[in-house]
Amino acid sequence: MPLIRELRKGYVVYEYSVPYIGSNPIHVVKNILFVYRKRSGNGVNHITGDIHYCIIGLLGVKSVLTIHDDFAFTTAKKGVFDRLYKWIFWLYLPIKLANKVLCISPTTKEAIDGLVKNNKTEVFPQHSLSENYTYSEDRKMKSSSIILQVGTLPQKNLETTLKALRNSTYELHVIRKMTCQQMQLAKELNVHVCNKYDLSDEQIVDEYKKADILVFPSLQEGFGMPIIEAQAVGCPVITSNRCPMSWVADEGALLLNDPLDEYELKACIEKVLYNLDFRNYLVQSGLRNIERFTLKNVVDRFIKLYQSL
Image (cartoon, rainbow, N blue to C red; front, side):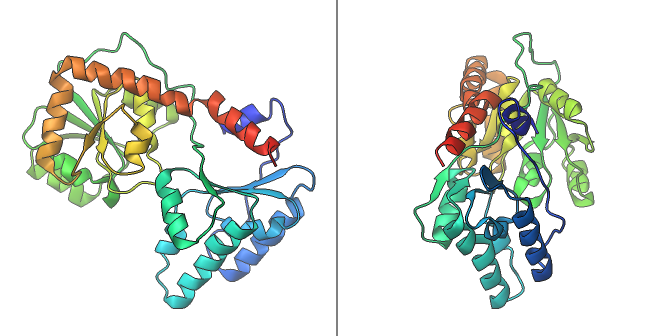
């Protein structure tokens, strides 16, 4: 992980993964004991990932908790007891016990604050760009335009992109495996789709560099990493006017008022492809925006945070 690699240049950093996954109470207890045995008495202990409850193993030492989303609670479907269990051990106790609670976006903070009243959470962008995402001024549009979409889960809203591109001459590159239903819809709408998955990091970067637009009409995200990955290579972005996407993109994207409106998306695609001045504005605004997420800036923020404890 680039962040840990950079921190290790000036500090001693240990990285551990808990031995058990899931919410089984026995596994939760074993993970807490694992964290207790591995914790640092003098340094800062940072919990990240879907193991918020492990903060319990850090009582009496300096602790930081990163919360990516509220999915552990909102996806609890086994009744009232399951929701109460998740609320106590994934939200209430971790927030009360941690010295610092970091939320990766304003959306996450708003959701968590709505579930647990507190004055601890703060927005702390933690996503940093790989050094592989670089901009070249030689970047040019191709004779046949390539539209890129990353993600095929329901919230990624690929179906609206397919409808917006019906009978078009554009080539749609989709990263992540499409479902049979999505492939059938693409065929029915006469959309030229190239579905790519199981790609290496280098191959994914290459897809961004080949694309003329990243279309990211997502309905819900914890962050929205493809937005800044595209901006970093100079690929114009179209995304939803919803948080956190609008916050992540800042002025470096054309925002969809209704990401489910195929006609609005089609008009936005045409505007970015054919209005070259506006296209250049998006590219330059995106390049300015990613300064928030450079590895150096993220590392510097973490160092200041740890030193403040």
